[in-house]
Length: 409
Image (cartoon, rainbow, N blue to C red):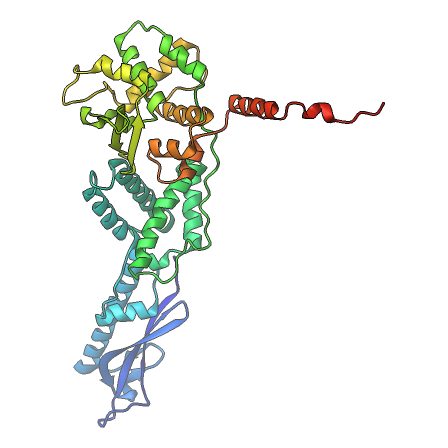
């Protein structure tokens, strides 16, 4: 951020000393705003050149005054350029304070973000997930790159964050980083949490996000129909690896487990519940929220298939997410399914099918480990089959009404 800057020296003629000398004052001007400093030097008015702002004469005392004034000038110039480089926001008062050694408590965005992320990292496995930590880290990296590109700074003061900064960062994410609408919104959401932290600590007065709306576009999440799931279940594969990936995918279609929760599943997560049936009981890696899922026959069969064959009480042979999705693409091709198969599609399918079969949204939300019903509503939708079923039931209840419509003879 460019600014106009000037330093000059003048005499405070209305405050003469007993010896006839007057104080030499320094005047710092930045963008028309002035701050004055005492040089702790004095001189007789007759030995001062107002135009040049220097002492005139050949004595050693005069030469020393000019040397000291030049040193002050160089020091103030250095402070100005350092503040420009550091945060881009320079004022005459800030230069004066730094010159006089008056410390200004400064809180920077990326510095706070780093401390916050270090705290999140310590809580991984307690009440934070590694994925959450990584998302904060990526957000911080994006902000670091943006601040460097936009302002040529290594950090920026929290109090300099305003609505324009937010909109500029959003544009940067959408253009330079190529983020879509929802990815951009997610980055802004993580950024906002840091600003809230700064406000709660009293480091900023106003919240720049007050008039900034984070907008998530509605996404039509795909899902598999019951018939498509059955095609995958009934398909015989030539390799053991494809069969295993298919089994784990189908397991998630009947339990709603996310990839990481299926990977983390252990024997002690399979328990006999109050109703005498087997349930999966655990805590979501992503949110730390508990989930309890009754096991249907299909997932029971899959668990039995791999029981005792894996080390460390692992119950399913889950590969890396990247490999799972690569094999699922192959499975989709072999089964003639045009939809793109990803592991998370199984979770979407579970939510959609359970709701369409009449399971309450409250129960589905609990099984998915969601913290609120709104999240469940994103995953699930009313299928055409559900509409047809409901309208058929409604038609049955309205039977006979259609015969009561009067017709002109």
